[in-house]
Image (cartoon, rainbow, N blue to C red):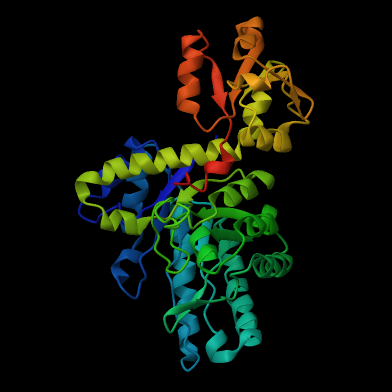
Length: 401
C-alpha cells in the first residue's frame, strides 16, 4: 500500500513543534510535506538550527519528509535585482530540503503572463528553473513544478504549467539541459479542479513525470484546500471533484509515491480539540485511496485462489471491465433468485450458498455490491469471514442522495 502524508502547515505550531509531529504519527500518517515559510515573512527561519529541530523531532517519531514546499515569490520586472534575491533564497531552500532528508522540492512557476506575455513568461521560467539545477544536483534534490493557476480579478486563469502537457514540455526541456532527471511534476488536485481539468487525463498525461501530489478538495470555483468529499452538488449529491477519475489515473500510471494531503484550511478551521480526529479521518481516506490505486496488486496477492464475485449489478460490470480478463471469477452470486442459473459476460450467476461448495483456503469472495455492510453480515451468518471489497470506484465521487 502507498504511504500517506500531510502538510506541516496548520498542524506544526511554533509553540509545540514536537507535539505536532507526535499527533501526525499517532494518526498513522508516515510522511510530512514541510512548508518553508517565505523568508520575506520570517527571515530568521532560514537558519539551519531551526530546521534541524524539525528534522530531529520528525525522526524521533519515525516520520520522514516526503516533500518540501519552497517559499513563494513574486517576480517584479521593474526590479532586476529581485531575481538574484529569489535565486539566492531558493538555493537556501534546496539546502534545507536536503537537511530534512526530502528527495523532492515543490516550486511554483513565476507568474508573468499578464505582465510580459506567455512567450516571455516561458523563457524566464525556463531560465529560472534551469538556474537551480546545479544546486539541486549537489544536494540530490529533484525540483517538482506545480500546476499553478493565476488568480486575478476574482477568478482563476490558466497558469504557466497548469496544463499537464505544458508541464511535461517544461520538464523535458529542463532535464535535457541538465543531462539527467532533475525535474519532475507536482500535481495539485484542487488547482486542476478549479480550472475544470479532466483529472484522469491530466494524471495520465504526466505519467512517469509525476513525482508528488497535493490532494485537497474545493467546489470547483475557489481554491479551498479542504479534506476530500467536502463539497457536493446539491441536486445529485455527487462530489464536485472527480475522485474516481483521479484515482484511476494514478492506477493507470502505476503511481508509487506518497498520497500527500494539502488540507491546511481544514486544520485552521476545525477546533483544536477535533484535530486529532481530523488527522485520523484523513489517514482513513488515504487508506481507501491507496486501496483503489493498488487494487491490481491486491488481486495479484490472491494468487491462484478462486475468485467469487458477490453481486451481479453495476459493480460487477466495473470489475469485469477492469479485471475480468486477467482475474476472471469462477462464478458470481447474487441475492436475486431470478438470476440464478443465468450468465452475465460468460460468468455463471449462482445462489450465495454455492460459495460454501469451495473450500475456504481455495476461495476468495470479492464484494461487488453497494450494500456491502449487509452483504458482510450475510457472509458472517454463513460462516464466511474471509473476503475483500472491490474498490467501489463508482462511489468514490460520493453516494447519490
